[in-house]
Length: 81
Image (cartoon, rainbow, N blue to C red; front, side, top):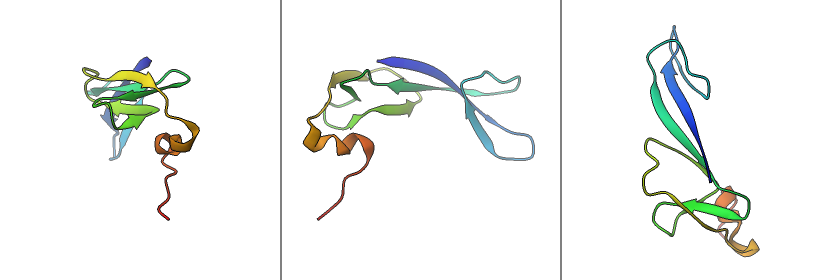
């Protein structure tokens, strides 16, 4: 699992930017957690993600990725029939 620090800040004139480059202004740190190949990340053991942006990395851990049948859960491609 890889963790990247993100910086969230308000731009002059309005709008918000989230970047991996630290700005020369007031910012808030966020963290992007990226699962390794063949893995998924979770906080509760049930909701699985490939990538998630969070305020705190505490409690997140990797598990084996789901089978092909349930891989759509990670990509958001679940359709109701």
